[in-house]
Length: 449
Ligand code: DOR
Image (cartoon, rainbow, N blue to C red):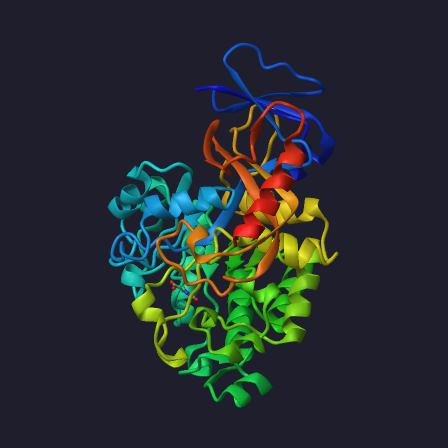
């Protein structure tokens, strides 16, 4: 394994409260040294990262990799390549595959794949995700499951959820809850409001999410278990989690870029990439999500990367399956809609995308301390570029952001000391002119787009 020296970058590492211009040396898959004017020595690849941010590798705690079952949409391998392209060095993969990841051997199957980045399996809460019989949580945890979730569907029966929280706390792993009251969401396909009326699409009220969040917080209180609320999208959910935290409960939550970058007004375009579950909400919900991200109520930003085939998405809005791809645009959307807009600082963005999700899952990622795993993301926070369909490495292309101009682009991803993604011509070998070269490259790319 080669030694890599990153020179001239601005290191932001929330775990050590660092924001400093410092060189970082990686060796043997670990962070070896930080310092001013470091020399790598023979055999070292020295990379000029002047003007760029050097951050701990991003951790996406909510992705759908579709294997086993829908390898036409994504595989563990193709999803990992897409993750690396997005600056992500660890993902937690949801178990709503076919069949579901509900036995130790399926957990081992996910872990057995050779991938450029770390893939952690999340196991199902109930067998076949049917909401009836609990899985063998101790066995699944021993096999390497980092959390439990029936994501894609809620656990409808509160008694089953209560037991799930009890058992998961015995193994010390969080339950990640897909909070949805199916009676309230019904056959809805978009957020309930003026936009759904004008669009003529069946509505899903905010209460469909909030009723379920409230129930699970109550159950977390009675069991003392770790509850993580997935894809929070409404103002009321943010408020419920805020109160749970004030009460000292072990409740955490995540949101996704589409819940702070888009509103239900956008859905009036009928672009089926915008059909997601929970649905994209109102401007008032978006404002509350942004406040929750800034004040610490929301702990993580995850992509909910949900690849779907072209055939399935090229239908009327109602008939399309919910989900959009997201790993590759996770960082640029966060930078564009939260950092550029002044809602949060860069350091907080990195905490939300790396440090905090790693700590919720209890996985050894999310910091750059000397001795830790050499997972690094280098990005240019000012690089403006237009998203093109051909740019994605995911097998699926269902992104509503194609055609948008975003600010911020990953130029280098390093996983356990290996370069797993490098933007052609942007991560230059050391000559002190990296920032100028990137500007030139950015201009060329925009001319060709
Ligand atoms: O939009 C979504 N897509 N929400 C989910 O909960 C599941 C996901 C999927 O698996 O496609």
